[in-house]
Structures are given as structure tokens and as C-alpha cells.
Image (cartoon, rainbow, N blue to C red; front, side):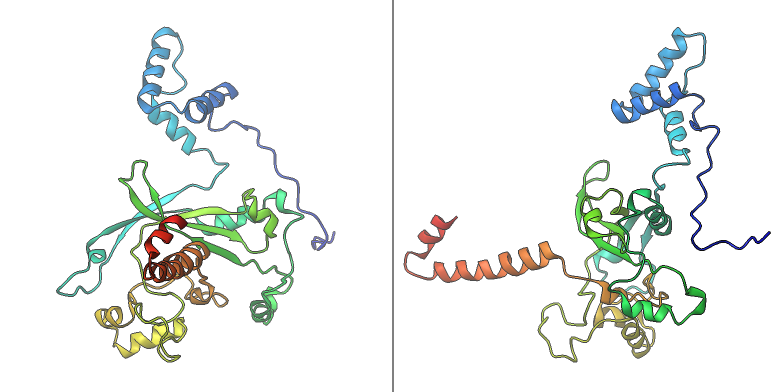
Length: 316
């Protein structure tokens, strides 16, 4: 019997789980957990008190010992959303005499495994007819991949990342985080616009502000010469490191490069994080360019005219 897989053969049907309510012991226990945690959103103290009353008036043990038992049972569900993980990071490199605040701070990072998220998006049956399986625009990257015979008949799956600052107030002390969003580049725009699982939060980053990630312009002189505003790249970062002899303070003071941190795209042959960074349409173009600059200049000019302040007040 020829066991060679026909390339037109569909995927095998999903295996049925004999214990579909695992880790719950019965459907009613699952419904109770859903009611307490999702629908009623009962506090931990009230859940524990309810379970205590349940045990007192019933001859059987309550479904959950206390709130912690309920939470641990929910967390052990092997299906559904990809679990969150977290860690703390702080600067451990060479420190100058005058320390900037970010060097002494500790930052919390929460994330989901990006590979698991992308695989889940690819496996979503709702996207079956709304995915571009062949490259339409990423010809440069596709031409690089096709040079490797082992990658023939594979699908190029680019990843779109986006981030924006937000304030998370629940149990975080009003900490500012940068949510990191990820979407499969093959998914068509009409699916991504309505989300449907095509746009996923994969991380919450607490990071200090940096200089422009796309070019080497000084923050106070973005209209510098071509030499001063060269595009950022991994090659440029490596050249700066060699020129500074690996001296972390020199790299930071000259180009705001943290020399002992390697971007996750450094080893990706088709992903230069500097080229992939795009302007923030709302904050940089609309608010930054139009509102903070053009509108401010127009208002300043009008106020310099006779009775200008009165006319500006009427415009408001």
C-alpha cells in the first residue's frame, strides 16, 4: 500500500474527546464555574463563602473547596485561549554615574506564545475562505524563501505587529503598558477589521520611550542630512557596537541603543524590525502633525492679528 500522502488530501477529522468537560467532573460543575466566574463575576471571598455554605447544608462535598480551587480548575482547561505568561526585566548592564530613571526601574512583561497564537489563527476554520495562501505583495521575501528547496510548496505566513500605549488601571496601580497586537498577514482585511480572532493581543509591554526606530535622526533634528538620518538596521547596530568597542554607555549616549539587548528579529532572514515599523496614524500623523503643529501654528498666527484672540475664541 502506498502511504504517500496525496497533496490534495484534506486534513483528517478532529479526534473526539471522550471527556469533553475535563477538568470538570460533570456538565453541571462546568456550568457552575461559568456562572460564578463569567456571568456573575462573583468575588473570591463570596465564592469561598458560598462553597462553605454549600458544604454545611449538603451531605456531599461542594464542587470547589474555595475560590482558589475554582480558579486553578479553570486555568487547567486545555482548550480555548492560549495561556498568559509573565516575567520581570530590569537593566543589568553598565551604569553611568548619573542614572536615568529607566535604568533603575523594574518592568513587568506579560505575553502569549506568538507561535501558538499564529498557529491558532491558521487553524481557525472561519478563515478558510478568507486567507491568501499565495503571496500577493511580499515578493521580495518570497523570492528569498524559494531559493531553499526544502521550503517549496510551503506557505509564506507574514506576521503583522502593532502597539499603542494604554493605561491599565485594574490592580496595576495605573501602570502604563504597550499592548502588542499580532495578526496573520495572509488574512484578508475585511476579516481583520471585524476581528473574529484575526487580531490578537499577544503581550503587554511596560517599556520606556525610545528614539525613532526607523532612522538615526536626532530627536531634536528629524530633518537632518541623509548621512545623519540613515535607515536603522541590524547592520547599523552591529557597526555602532564595533565602533564603540562594545561600550554600552557610548552606544546609549550616541544612538540610544541598548547594546546588550538583541531584537527578536535579529535572526529572522526576512524580517528587519526597523523596516517593518510604520508611523502611528492617529498619534503621529493626525494628532502630532496636524493638531500639535499645524493647528498650533495657525492659532498662534491668528492670535497675533488685531482682535485675533477673540476670533480664535469664536472658533472654539
